[in-house]
Length: 92
Image 1 (cartoon, helix red, strand yellow):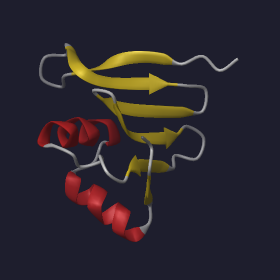
Image 2 (cartoon, rainbow, N blue to C red; image 1 turned 60 degrees about the vertical axis):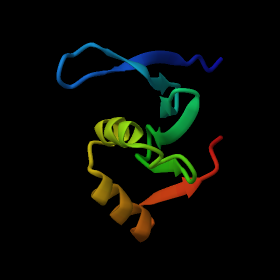
Image 3 (cartoon, rainbow, N blue to C red; image 1 turned 45 degrees about the vertical axis):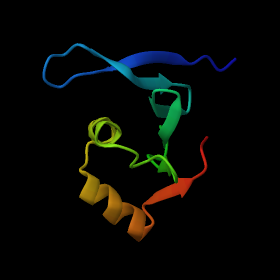
Image 4 (cartoon, rainbow, N blue to C red; image 1 turned 60 degrees about the horizontal axis):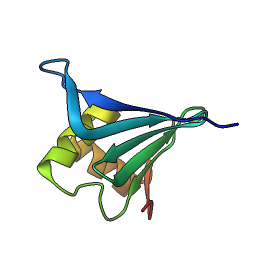
């Protein structure tokens, strides 16, 4: 059985849970969800990252928390997409 655990992201500033920004942990993936939209997933074993091709850069708020989740800036994300290190897929 593959059970998932959902938790709110925490604000770097206050340490409090952030409304509508979620981390979903499964046996094989860590998933970032903003509101009801999956923004991206990381494979726990390989470290491979994929982002939703339509929503990965949806808004400043989504970008802020995506950056926090990935640990990189929007510029670095764009560079990794361009180089093929981060793949874009339809996740929703």
